Amino acid sequence: MPKKGRLEEIFSKAIYSDDPTLYSVYYRDFDSLLKVSLSDFVRASENFELIPASRVMRITKDAKVLYSKKGPQSKQS
Image (cartoon, rainbow, N blue to C red; front, side, top):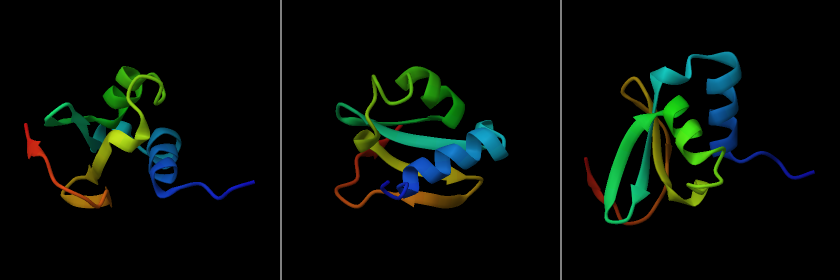
């Protein structure tokens, strides 16, 4: 069985061991970078069915960056 990726670990911890509203998810939406709470992202993405994990660019909790995808940065909104 493959090891869980960093993204899956963060989502799992936030949902089952913490308050997912404290986390912010930044994801690509065409030419924009959208910011939503982790719980809103899970609902909107329907568990990564509508918004794949590959579009997640960064996850923060408070001011701490927990996950950041390497590559070109899009503009924030």
